[in-house]
Length: 291
Image 1 (tube, one colour):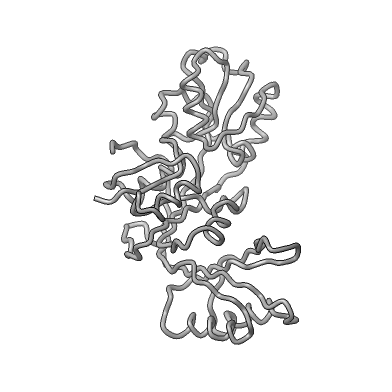
Image 2 (cartoon, rainbow, N blue to C red):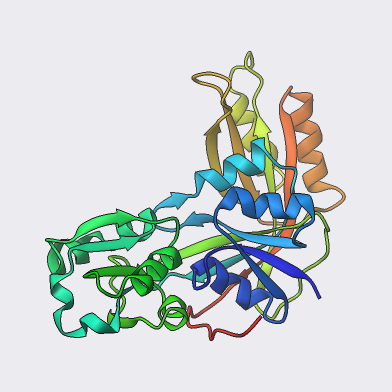
């Protein structure tokens, strides 16, 4: 049986994504995204699930930076999970929840619920945690404090907290994309498969005018659809960037290799970060199972 690492602690959206794709595998929590990736690199776990992008807050830059600069871990899958944020409190404070003095959660979750917090808990001081589940765990461990957490239904069940207000996020249709990383390039098969993607990292030649236009043209005339293009600093100086491009097609023997050959002929650097299936989960209500 395989062991799958995820960004913990238990009850996080990352665990929810992990449970949906690997319901029968052993799960191991890590406290940070870097340690999660290091667990795969060292062989401590067979694969890891880490957040990559939120529909409201954008890319998780730490994940991207470690994928590019720190580890050579291929992406072998992607899962999209709906984000449903709830206000969680300790059962001791059911009757006076509006008097809580602090609200704990991940920075992305706080930002996603800004309007609710402004109206419902204007006196509450925002406190940042490494994850929504870490915030829920803190509330559980401090029953005498008048504090609340923003988290999901799994976190509430895991830490025996009460959901006092449901769906407090400011925007509907909020989702988070998680990527599955593994040194073993085994095909992941689930009922949730929607299609395949190939993700490329491309660096441009510094002395080539119009290089980005040429890069995009290489995909365009081959009728390859790009679902995302994003620039990130190369960390070598101001104005130096690389581009991460998602192509909505599985790696083949002609089209994508043809793009790579054309870009390399232009002087671009090209690295394939992964060619993988992508999945989507329609509901964030996942029952907690034992390890």
